[in-house]
Length: 221
Image (cartoon, rainbow, N blue to C red; front, side):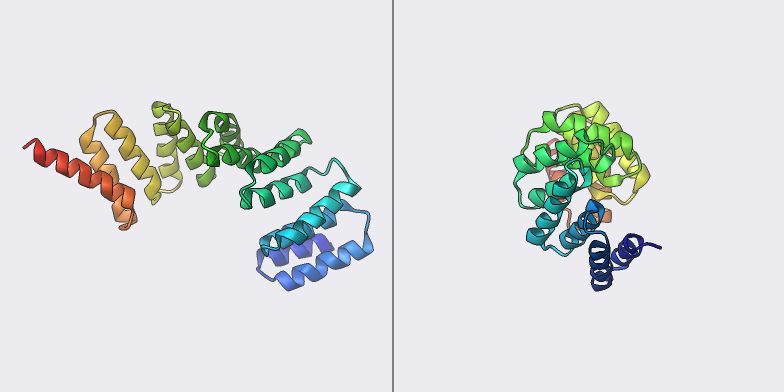
């Protein structure tokens, strides 16, 4: 096992000091290899040390201007800082440099979603969903973007897929309840709100939705 492999294993196990030691040794042995700086940057990002993480990613880019994962790391830093325009540029650069994985597409889509530019988020979240069909969070956020752009039929199928992946996903039930309301299927909406509340009793939106339906039914009696 190399220094990098062992360091990543330590990170997964939450042994951050041991991981830092291995990554430091790797940099000392191979100071011109950008991968070591990227891995140390990932560790620092995990430790919420954004300032130092950014320096390590920048060093990796100095050594290799095509280091796609370094740009992805920078994108994550700026996303957490809510600098969505800058984050967007970094995620796009990572994709342009060949990082054809779900994560950069997902995060690029999320920068638009957080900016409430729902239509712009769609192609990136769709691509992420294609690359990672079993990722619950990716699928759910794609469903939300579809719902926000009033593509309710497709959104419904995505949320149903989320429940196939995670039957305890209260937010998927809530959103299916909202879609059922748009379809004027009151009984189905109530079922989904009830299921959301069974999973998460403090789900305020589902609770409000259920209350509104019950009030409406009382008025129609």
